[in-house]
Length: 230
Image 1 (cartoon, rainbow, N blue to C red):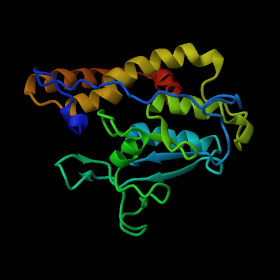
Image 2: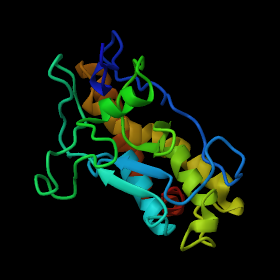
Image 3: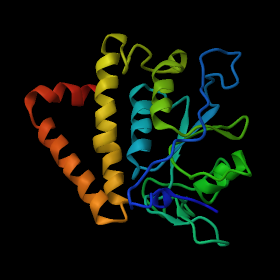
């Protein structure tokens, strides 16, 4: 049965995110399974998805948009197949249908779901973006945004326009990791826990936590941590 984020709720009504499934790495090592080669990879995103948006931001800032192609799905979910009721990310039928979105000229897929099924016909997880796609092997390399941006930061420097720009410098990594831990759980994933909660109690619990975090962030001493995690 096809699944989406709205299905990830516990008996208490709280949203519980499952881990991303495809966790392979592109490497600067030319002998690796997924070597960092120009023109080999494609990034599928939705501008409506914050996880995907940070990947396209990294790609642009590092100057990788000539080496890694990218395209966006429509910003609103639609039916992914005529045979069931699953709703998810879909591609427009033409380049002019939705501004910023385009058909899948690479694989001819009508939905992100179809991409996952090309990569793994027996896949039973969620059909999420971002998707880092290997054009050569016709498969999903990775669908975890935190790992994709790390790859963009280090593994493609030999073909990046801004190879000396390090967005995860060694002297700040501990601070960035610490900030990311509470920003992710409290804000980034917190808004999903609010939005997908199916009962009032878990919604109010997470909502109160988010309010407290933003109150803390308004304090001047916390702004450095917030900026360093972006």
